[in-house]
Length: 327
Ligand code: DP6
Image (tube, rainbow, N blue to C red; front, side, top):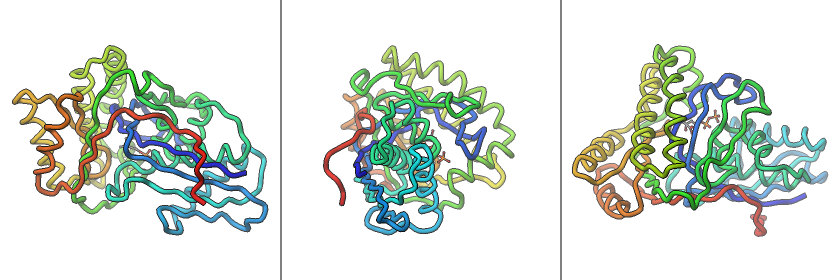
């Protein structure tokens, strides 16, 4: 009744922004991401009738409040599927402590799902694991798979799953995660996207753009067309942020360094150093490049004021069971 899993984070190339169903976490639009190789979570889950309540430890600290509720709620879902009532001990660690704020819910809920389902004795394929992970945190369903992954938008739970477009060996793109001194975040991602759907006058335009970006991105990934992938990802990120900025209340999590990086990427591109940026809900930036240009980009981006950490990622593998337990 004990299992450990690792999962990598993913960077959305066509973003998920808005829910059709808040409880089941069904997205308004489909999304495509790249699973990365250097931002990962390891999680051990043990179910036992000896445990009186769920005990959850994240990065050495006992989880409390909203964080604990979200994880215990996810364990409840897995207990319901496996028809068990046993409480669990969960120990989870990210390998990117210095880079707090980089999509930890994606790797976190993917690792939790894979470990907890295995510990509960469920034998599920990746599609069904993605459907369960999705209900913990939407973006985590994409981390079940490695490489380039699409999460399908649908109006029922069994039809909204993640699937691999191409594996991690198909197309070597670098995702340079640039961690910056972050601005204060006023709202969670969950609150932000909910408010965007309700109040942004651009939300309809976002859905239209996301639809055509999905087609371009599938084509770019399959055909290994970096220029098309980069252009589509950058514009898609800006469209998502245009929606966020025009939400009431405004969602603005960029810091001065975020904007400096956006300018720098444009300048470098004009010089012939091809790269593109994409930003999720925080202040941190992901710069996409081909392998031959990444060294130069890493060197340059480190010189920008407010940059605190730079992590160069390659396409990474999907979530998996491992033998070494955390307790
Ligand atoms: C901007 O998956 O963290 O990173 O489903 O509410 O847990 P919940 O949200 P989450 O949202 C990620 C939003 C995004 C875009 C993306 O990853 O596609």
